[in-house]
Length: 117
Figure 1: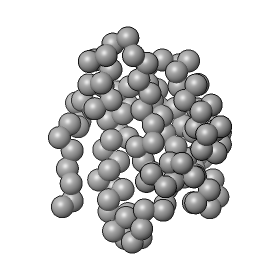
Figure 2 (figure 1 turned 60 degrees about the horizontal axis):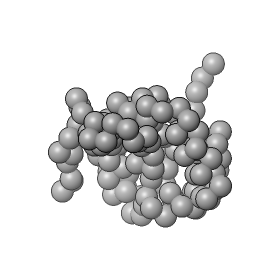
Figure 3 (figure 1 turned 135 degrees about the vertical axis):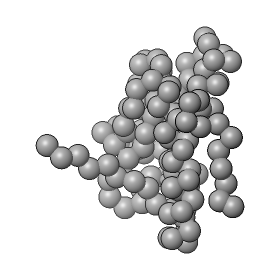
Figure 4 (figure 1 turned 90 degrees about the horizontal axis):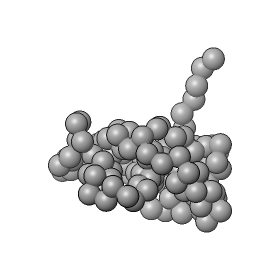
């Protein structure tokens, strides 16, 4: 402990999956939250964000729609980071997530990205 990633920096599991199945429309999502928050974002009060990425724009739109319909994520709170190489960052978030879990004592938290003008 804490766990470490076997794939990071110059590759990701998302990229490996896309390479292994090149015709599959891979969308990386839900890497930054606990399973309870994945399926019930209202467990964290207020607005907070979910990050997705992938190479296929239509697939990302479909995933965004399903996240909203099935789980209640607000589409405006879903941030598209671009292509599948962005999964490197979402996967590396694990290191910070584990530390936050240790500070808070439970997995019921998330991030909210705030932008300036």
